[in-house]
Image (tube, rainbow, N blue to C red; front, side, top):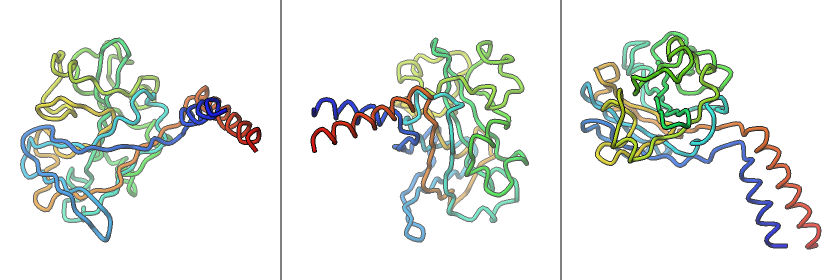
Length: 250
């Protein structure tokens, strides 16, 4: 009975619709400062990007293995005052997100949004979006020179065009070996090459996202996914098994 109950609970978790994200901060390039802060009782992170070229990330691997089209919601809470920057500028609308994708045959790319584009600046879309909004937006493609495996050779794509690609961070070994087009600004930890499938990114290659001091203060990063139909069915089966075992044990 205990073994059946364990199987039922395990299957139930496979069908879970929300990823319980485990997030890690990391330096990508140069020496941005990352601080733990508290704002109005909320535990937050401060990312100080004081010069062009500085770059840091806040990432998770909890959505690795899911398809881009299974993304349900993406959000982060910005707690500093964006109004101190020019409206619509990089520092006013940052951070942006980077997602590692793969074709499953050893090829990787990073897809990203550009929150300075006007479409992102309606309300708080740059920090709180769902798939219905995201799917129609332009997907920037980075960190590879070989885009032949992407639709339309990686040109003029939306996130929906990339819906069937898998979210997956390259391994340390893959990033250490590298490939044509992989740059120093790729979302991976400086020196260790540890990478995360989904990342909020602070800073840029140039000066587009310099925050100064104080820096960007953010909290509660979140990414949720919708399970594949088969996984949802397994979840329901898991619930049924757990319920049956409970009744049998009563």
